[in-house]
Image 1 (tube, rainbow, N blue to C red):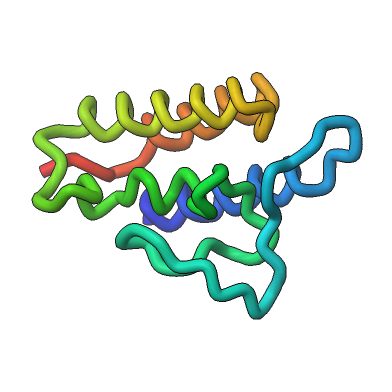
Image 2 (spheres, one colour):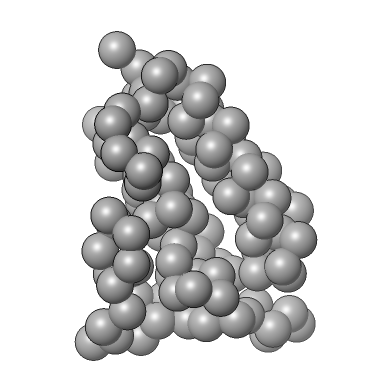
Length: 114
């Protein structure tokens, strides 16, 4: 259930970022897009993606690192999400408030827990 909450929170925040008119967004995927990278498949419609077409959820999947295997622990997962969120924030793709909410959702998730 917490994993679903994390996915919904990331999707919701991605949607918020997509409708902000004040800041440019690198890429916004529309329904029917075919960009597929990493293990997460195609990002949700309206998800904020980086210059490679990947969302945070794709870059840091709950199942484990994109390099393979599983997360060593919950802290490793949270740190990876925090780094990805910081990268998106630095690129101007998400606001500070959105970055904090993404990290908070990762902390509350079950990802990386055994």
